[in-house]
Image (cartoon, rainbow, N blue to C red; front, side, top):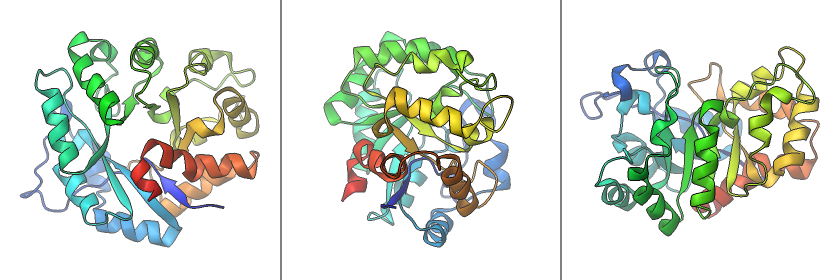
Length: 283
């Protein structure tokens, strides 16, 4: 297989005096306290697992909008890592803030509308005050990850159509309900996004676990996703260490889940798509 690239690991500093926690929504995530992983630990895990490069996602549930550690950590390994950060895009100075982080090395952005510490609230996604930040992403060629559930997909659709030059990456595929199995009617809102070419899907441990439940299966779900979106719009993300287990075990489960796909499709999902979304990873 070609070069493996992970577009969703996290890192947490072991120096809280230098990088003090200030979690978004005021509650720090359990995983960031129980399984903190420094950038050095991530690199060691990547070396053990033959993961060549990674787009490291800022931990909003640890540091809020302070991207200092993800930027500084990735700067230590510029040939292996790029940083994906978070900015309060509702603020009037959001474009200037984004530029300042990009100057420090930020290669992409992420919107965190909810998750382990808060229910999803997609209201900020279609707030017009966020549009200048989106326009800047279009200008700078920055990808935007969005962490939301099915409740936020109408807003994602609007944003993708309004800003067609911005690659939008749905974390965890937007958390579709797949338990009903083929033809996956409960996940219809996900498949309705397929015609929108700037929407990409991030395959993480959550979906690899969900396809083992109910009437779902990896052999019926993933080929349907590839048929709808194409493998060039799918990318693997480990969610390490948020998801339990070693990076090696997480990658192993992903490979097993996608085993029914062609070698070419797997190469796009495990590396080539990541290089489209984060061109610095192609260097």
